[in-house]
Image 1 (tube, rainbow over the protein chains, first blue to last red):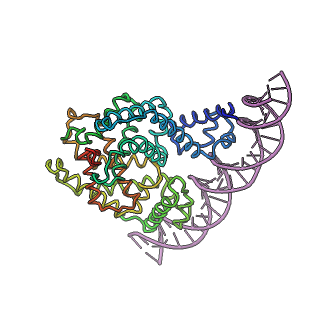
Image 2: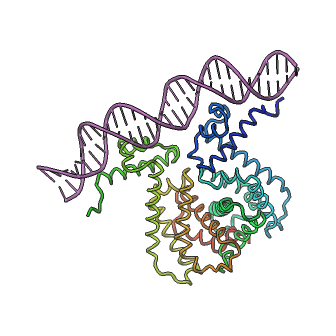
Image 3: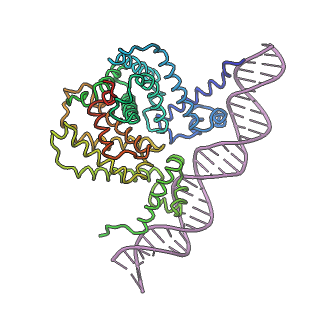
Amino acid sequence: MNFSEDRRITRTKAAIREALVSLIEEKGFEALTVKDIAIKANINRGTFYLHYKDKYDLLDQTLEDIARDIESILLEITNLSVADFINGQTPSAIIIKVFEYFNANASLTQAILATKGNYALQNRIKKIMWHNLFEKNYAPFIKKENLLVPSEYLTSYIASAHFGVVQEWLENGCRETPEEMAKILSNLTFRGPLTAAGIR
Amino acid sequence: MNFSEDRRITRTKAAIREALVSLIEEKGFEALTVKDIAIKANINRGTFYLHYKDKYDLLDQTLEDIARDIESILLEITNLSVADFINGQTPSAIIIKVFEYFNANASLTQAILATKGNYALQNRIKKIMWHNLFEKNYAPFIKKENLLVPSEYLTSYIASAHFGVVQEWLENGCRETPEEMAKILSNLTFRGPLTAAGIR
DNA sequence: CTAGTTATTAGACATCAAGTTGATTATCTT
DNA sequence: AAGATAATCAACTTGATGTCTAATAACTAG
């Protein structure tokens, strides 16, 4: 059985991904062409089509990889205690991990999350983050009857808020450490944005 | 002096905008072509170029109009009292107005905000909303030295969160009334998402 | 190391949308 | 009603897309 793919394929795909990242940084996703990618990756344009249907397919597969990476990172955190949740210990640990991943793959994640790009993509990442960071963890502690707002808006609110903060961080060049970012998000979500703003 | 533009121009532009909205709903912004617009608007393709540089220019100008609309709505709310702010009265009034505008222009705003589209655009709207809804109003009450988190992350957090909720509402077909939505956003932002979730 | 497999290449090709242009027609404004 | 200007039609160039074939290069398994 053949587990590792042909080295040529590995190399070609790596070159294509590298070209994608650099071109997104350069001109944004919508503006780049398959021809651009082929030139930058130093491959024949036809070769691109041997691996991807079009540039959207390439973006999809790239995102798929990132999603897989994040999921596998989160799977490392296995057993959670209720107490840790309520006082924010476990969420922080998870969030730190995610920020560390973004940091370690800065050029890729910055290109994909932080620059002008497709927003269906962004929506998708938001859902992945939501699913892995909150749904799995918080859901057990949320009682429908205690909700002050419909759950779909609670979800949108938190997911969008966190995603926005991550984007801001990436756009600013990841100046804060993952730990600091986790602290910031904890403050905002656990105490509420207005308290974090010092208004009350 | 000539204030009203030629009727032919008005008609053509209206037809183009209508075509844009219906095509965004149909296939999303990136997928639609100038040719599509011309056919749907029942104009010559060349005519499109008499008014817009390309489809991105059309989108920009459309967004510009929406932004102007929102700004003029917000200008109606003139004098604000500090007390109303702290207890959330004024923000609610503003937010209701905005939701009402979205509701009244549902097909346009839904097409632009809620479907797969350009995200630079989304970012821009986020900034407009932030500027008009929060910066002008909350900023005077926020003291830098009281902030528990850097202001740029506070900004991103709140702007993204609210934008996410608006999107969710539009995607779901605006089932709640503007008043209900304002209430939901107040609960989330003033009490904090976890309190709104009934967790504490 | 070899043989057979498979990825990559070069180049050509048809297709389609994007913009532009010039001459003509239709419609508006005053 | 007359002059201005918007819209039309058709044609054309350019550039990207996706597909294909034959030839070559690189890999893997034995």
